[in-house]
Length: 231
Image (tube, rainbow, N blue to C red; front, side, top):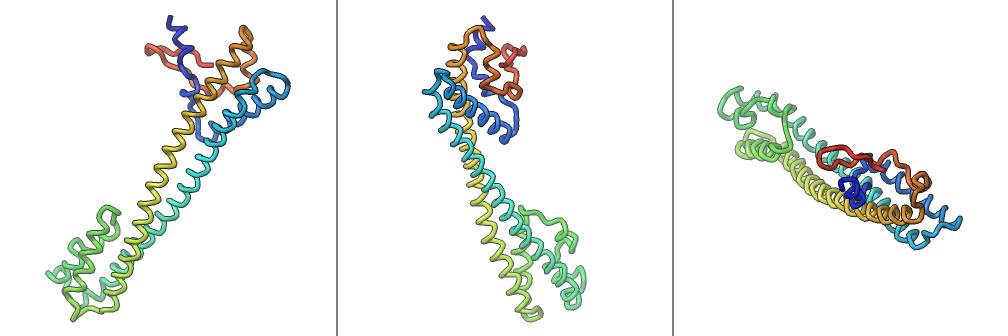
């Protein structure tokens, strides 16, 4: 009975490979199916849905790759503004120290944890650090350069804009990855439909499977905690 149950399991749901290898696997299957139909195999009804499922999968991978590249670019811009703000805070420290004694209450408004805190800045704390540092400049405008304060504010504005775009791009990338999963599920189902049709035509001839499928990336299916052979 356990062996019979295996026929109700889609083996393509257990493929273990990179997205690129999965796409190659299905590209080869699609091409093999088309070739066999051109040579007289009775699977013409399977060709169009297989092509459509494959093209949707291919497009989703391309879209994901584009979004990931764009997300990395946006992240780099965000990191650049963080680093620029940090560099300014470190550069301004000497001038602030000249006006306010180090470890004085006023100095600590600018650097409550010294300059070391700026070297270990994280995205989750940068908003608070920027606000605190700019507030210190605003609280001591009489002693500090207005130009420097304006420069810091502009960096923060640019950072906030870049961060907003980055977050939006992350959301888009997440959606594209979800689309890949949906398209892969559709492709797996179509491949399973194709497999059943192929088996029905070539009963007792398992060697025929190699014509249609590269079996190497189909993982073993586990049933009742025991390994069962895949395709």
